[in-house]
Image 1 (cartoon, rainbow, N blue to C red):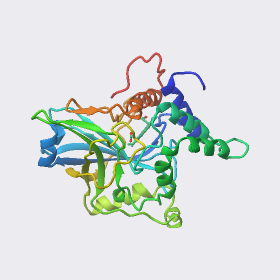
Image 2 (image 1 turned 90 degrees about the vertical axis):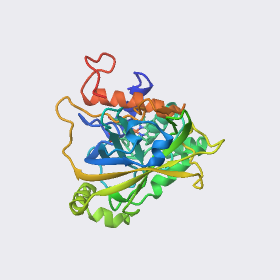
Image 3 (image 1 turned 60 degrees about the vertical axis):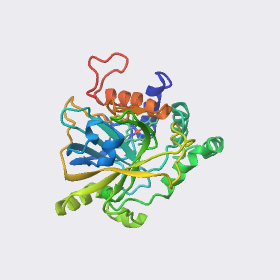
Image 4 (image 1 turned 90 degrees about the horizontal axis):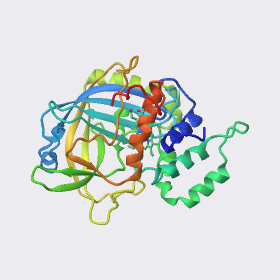
Amino acid sequence: MAGGDLYEQIVDAANALYGTHDGSRALHAKGTWCAGTFTATPEAAELCRAAHLQGQPTPAVIRFSNASGDPHSDDWQRDSHGMAVRLRPDGGDEADILAVTTPAFVLRTPEEFLEFMRLRKPDPETGQPDWEKLGAFFGEHPESQTAVQATLNSEPPASFATLVYQSPHAFRFLAADGSATWVRYRWRPEAGEATLPDDEAKAKGGDYLRAELAERLGEGPVAFDLKLQIPVEDDPLDDPTAVWPEDRERVVAGRLEITEIVDDPERGDHIEVFDPTRTGDAIELSDDRILHARARAYSVSAYRRLGMDVENPSTPPSH
Ligand code: HEM
């Protein structure tokens, strides 16, 4: 358990926290797959030459998820929810945008995240983590409080379609005219934001979010605007715990229209791996250590989903 490289240890820690579930993601294990179309605005095309941002309707695969590593997690739990989007422009680079309902990430480095995951593990005797150690850790990491408080305060969703999803990382858009612009992503639901009181959500059972989405899509598409937040000088570009002030300029980059729930495409040895560093050559990554760590940890999780030895894979996971 203590062996392996940092990224294997992080996945081990997630498995220790949520259990090992064959074929499941180590985190965000329970998901609902959808299909839709993304159409970028002229403002996005001006900022970036990426194929999916030029304005032609682009097919999109979407996976909504609960952040837990338990594939049977209850939808009513106060936890983060995810929206992973893969944009598949005709003849251009595919691009993934991964976003969650928490406005910031909990820590700045993968080493600290590993420590945090280990500290959260309940003692088998008491069923509780060591609150004293966890409290001391939070004392040493005040930057974690934005994410921790947001998660504790988040009422269960009324719907996957009524949540704001955002990414705490900065990406650098390269434009056709040679200019470059740093941005952070945020998906804003056209249906507006709505949550439920805990008891009302609980009364709906552990799997209400998928059923609600199916019903809603039966009445028409579900849409999100993709908003870009543009920093000013001195806003940190590599710190996912730091929220940029709300008054920063926002540009609407496009609209995602989700039309249907689709069957889980992962069968046999075919898996899908959403990766926040898969952006294409017109979108660059910041030096954010969490962003780079994610690509590595997701690969470890993907190899394990395929039942492969990370050290000695016979074939890489389909990325
Ligand atoms: C060091 C920090 C992080 C680690 C180690 C980590 C780890 C993981 C792992 C292991 C998975 C499963 C991957 C797979 O099997 O395909 C996952 C999924 C996911 N993570 Fe993270 N994560 C981190 C930070 C973040 C952040 C900052 C976000 C915010 C956008 C995020 C959003 C997601 C989402 C949306 C999924 C689900 C993707 C899907 O539906 O396939 N994660 N994460």
